[in-house]
Length: 248
Image (cartoon, rainbow, N blue to C red; front, side, top):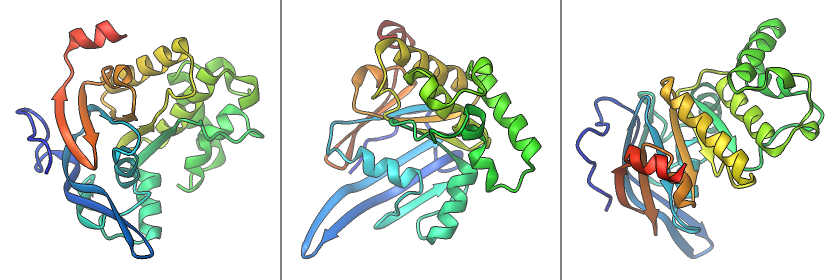
């Protein structure tokens, strides 16, 4: 069971993200728990989608599958025209590094490294030279408004600035999508506004942004809201421009 896709949304023909009949079951001894119970979801390049639901709704499990951090029990998942449903861990790691830019609630920055050094980390695995890695990291930090914080370590930055470093790190590899898991959960209202505005700007530049959140107001800053509860999609709707302005 899942929501009917509104007219104009992605179809399997043009979807950069496509989940079909996805179920995820966890087993502990003789006990089984079905976290996802049949998810159909398609997202096209350049969309800004929020996946929203309360704790225990299945949104975190869905995030892990979208991010290739976990695999489906049944069903299929295609990312950038690649079927990742049955890939092994090494293949999934390569897909994650190439196609997905992660932004987490806790920033996940290395405290001993400068901002640009944190940002360049995904490029280390891509085989780029040190000079090119630093140049691309600097450009990414400039894009998120931190050109004056290149040499600052995380402890010298505010929470909002640390999250922007994390967004720059997500951008630096030119991924297919940015996957943000509760990215405003540790931020005050001013920093939350700045981060959500940045996501909107990146989306306006053509980036695909998928935002996982339990907060209705945060979800309403996206252009499309997918509501999840009890492992099912309850609704999948466009967010009106008027609503986005009111909740900004």
